[in-house]
Image (cartoon, rainbow, N blue to C red; front, side, top):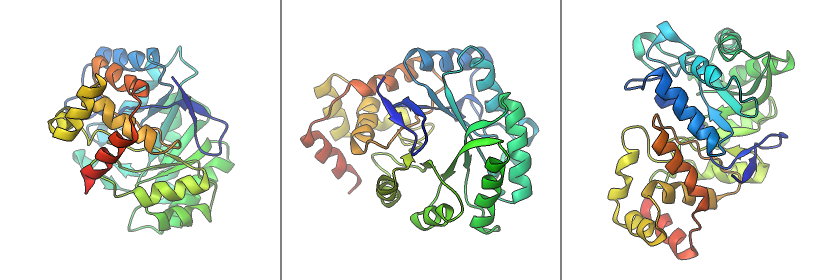
Length: 282
């Protein structure tokens, strides 16, 4: 699989990554099926897996996805694992918590769950409106200075928040939602391009529960048929050709779906295809 660089770091990973969330939330598969899915991703050349301490059913099992991934990767040190902190799951709800004390404890817990001395890429999961953004980012920067994390990323941010984070520390990645039908972060992508920061679009196939339905779009289906590809592969190929800093992280709990997504790197869209796909969000 072609490699792409994670921002200004020296990390090169496969052009497509894997999102681990579906392996640990409602409707998740068995542990054995989950590990099979992760191994299928590695066999396809995927060397970047995204996770978070909050990828679990509720706060009684924080770190579920991290522990699962660590177990699956015992024999695969070549895979880069990125995790996040800044969300908590009281009774299964999604609640932001950007307090420096929480982020410090979350990082310590993630280190244990992943079984590593330092986390390769640690991302602040989501700005907390009750905590000054610079304080949250500063707490992550402190953890980096202490050697607990190697590289810093931020997630679910605006251009203004990205600029604010850069006043505090070096950022190598931004993880925001983006797909054919949601271009709300195009301005963030543009700024990342200018700064040489990797952009990790989550929900690149529109999100859990709806990825299988994107082929219902007539334009997308027609282009897929013309290329002998699936609609999902076309959606990922569009992202890959949109920018060379993009590393999509489709999440899946099924081996077949992961293999299907990985094949997107072999799809070469024409300029006409790209124009038709761009028009879908208008």
